[in-house]
Length: 241
Length: 307
Image (cartoon, rainbow over all chains, first blue to last red):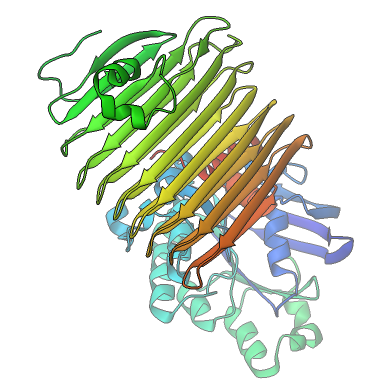
């Protein structure tokens, strides 16, 4: 589904990602772990094609097609959708209007039961953390994507809202065979979603891609992210699963 | 011209210099301004000069329908010069929708409209005014609001198809406990827009807000001067936001606050810039092209995205 080969990315003349290799197959759930400023968001924005993220080496393939030079909207139309960590406010535009505009599949609003008249409010204007995530997941589902990327999925969410979001992701995306790439800092998300692969990103490099998320998470909890770089079993978890 | 019985609205339509329809139900008197000037002597106190065209609307009772007015120019190089007077009586609430437009994109027409709106004690008026012009037209829109004690005004004013040159003036005086909220949204393209708004808080506990949304597209210039003057102890706020869409765009916004009463609070905020890349990227990630994303942000900024 998504294959990233030797990707290096520069932002404002600074190299932020180096030689990233990663492959997500159809229907797989991948989680990206890493400390702050390790380049996780840069990787998601690079996959989506944001102009300020300059690809200086490598390529991104989606369903076998090289999308490295494609525009953001072209990637979206191919089936890549990104849920933002902190989405910007679009003043004067109601969420219902945007959903109607972008919709590739109808949504059952009763399923989401948005509170506080969320649909009739301006997009992300005064939204709480939970409302932002609900708005994002509704937009993602409307787009009927093949690959959904969630940047810092747990940011700004309380336990109840996080659990609600996880249920929606499992029910509406994973069960439909949508591939997922999630950035998170919470172990209970790993436990709930049971990803096929976890990747650890350190200082712009993927230092581990493991099919044993429990082991990797335990290592991180006990010794911190840096241990992943020193890990003697790294050979068992090569960059490309 | 007709004065229809049993119609469920009140309406005034003028094309070039001809009144195409004028009618009103019980509770509203709707006349041409020259007729009002001739037959209702008291109106002469409010017309600055003898009107040659325009409408007079006198809302005497609460009505459950909006009153609509329309000025259209359809002839090349036509010149309209209406003088309008609106009086809303004590305790009455009403809504007025107005359109001023050109029927064709290139008429080289001119429209100079002068209006005065009197809101009697504790009356309420919601006003929506839309302008839609051709690229070589010249337009002046000047309006004066007089709010008596406890009166409430909400004005929404918009122009997204601007003329070559557009001058918009408003002057509002507020008595005790009255309030006026102005929201004006304009888009300039290959032309110039000048706006002058003055709001005088003369009474105690009066309040006023001027909210401007300005978009300057290619080869255009927008200048706005907004002032609130507090003589009484009220509250006033100016909120000016501008977007530049092109290298050849220009916006000059000058908010002015004059406070002559220590119990009054006057504030302003202003920001002029380009559309944020973050907003564009966000909408493009939903599959909208760059142009579609810009259009959506612009229409949202001007406050008119339908659902």
